[in-house]
Amino acid sequence: MSSVIQTLSGAIATPYQANITVPNWMLGSMERVMQYYVDKNLRLDTLSAEMMPAPVEGKKYMLYAHIPFCHTLCSYCTFHRFMFKEDKARAYFISLRKEMEMVKALGYDFESMYIGGGTTTVLEDELARTIEHAKTLFPSIKEVSCESDPQHLDSPGFKQLKGLVDRMSIGVQSFNDDILKMTDRLDKFGTGQQTFDKIMGAKELFPIINVDLIFGFRGQTDEVIQHDLDMASRLDPRQITTYPLMITHQTRKSVKGKLAAPQADMANQYRQILNSLNGQYNQLSAWAFGKTDDEGFDEYVIDYDEYLGVGSGSFSFLNDTLYVNTFSLRKYQERIAAGHMGVEQQKNYSKKDVMQYRFLLGMFSGRLSRKYFRDTFGVNLDTALFKEMTSMKLIGAIKNDPRDPDNLIVTDNGKMMGLLMMKEFYSGMDNVRAQLRKPLKPCDM
Image 1 (tube, rainbow, N blue to C red):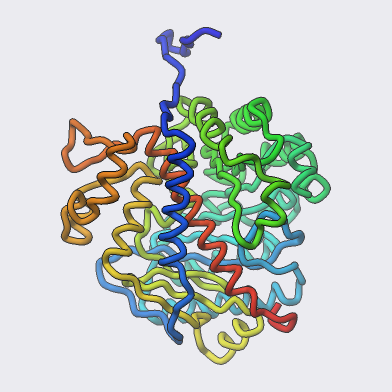
Image 2 (cartoon, rainbow, N blue to C red):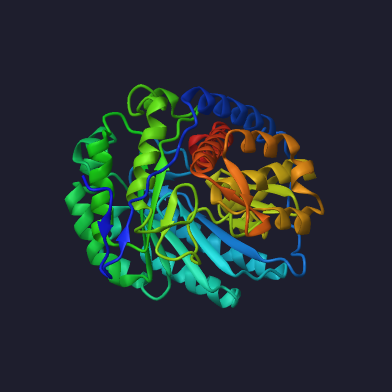
């Protein structure tokens, strides 16, 4: 194969060659280090909470809304969700809108709204009504992001979301029918080609379509991954996100050894993804790619230091404090009916904890800045997080930007580390969700 390609303008461009040199033993060591910090900082040693704090003047916030219903439950997914029942779902949407009114009464306004699940589009009419209500309550909302699975893309009600949702993220996971069959998605959502056709038909509805893919499945050879990437590229979406398969305490029996490829395959698969997508897309984070650099994507925590969550099982991070809404659907409905918000737990984090978290996000997003730490925390990044900075420099994950002394360049090794660190963080959050769901009884669902 030629090492150069001819562009439409006649210029010669060299294909991207990812320079990932971190050995597998070092990736394993980083994984264990992250597991230690995740277990230490994501313990459920919370205090009770009844109300969210008021907003702080001058800060910008994002609104997160959680829809915890799915028609089918995927074995590898640990997000907070229940089997869909229409009567419960309609009652839930009503309560969700009431909770947003309580947030408005506290004085909040938001620049952005993200709706996650579950499957957010289980009732398109209720979802549309909820987005309209949010935009009325919070007039500063400029963009709304939403998730869906392929099943709903060609439903009659899906068109109601046109003009309300700016970015629709579609959970494809893979276009390969063998992978879809192995993950119990083939019968639920159709073949890879059927999903491709549905996305192509839905593209005109939204300014931004994001295609979610997962790598790290057993049997996902280089050829299978390349086929997934090629199919996604043929759709020409504004964004493509390539998540690694995450193994948690909750999914270890159903995923590890059954669905998951060996951990040692991850670096090679990630190298293939970088080589395929860089050049077609700009890299927005370790696993997200977009046509432009200035548009929102799934990891909203990168663009917003503080966010407020509404709905059962949602999280908020405000004033260095994590707030957790009740995971019981019954308790959530009772709290809202009594005029209370859904929040029931809180945990405060130290300045050092928050700085380490922001360092993780900086590595993951490729936006590691000395100026950010100086302005936000009043510290010198190199000394305040000496151990973290030194270790990342030693393995060639970061280097100084010769054009800007305040900026750090995250290399391909750094992207690999950022991906691994974020994977472990999200796995830790999934373990927290599992612990919060464990006490639920049938009457809570």
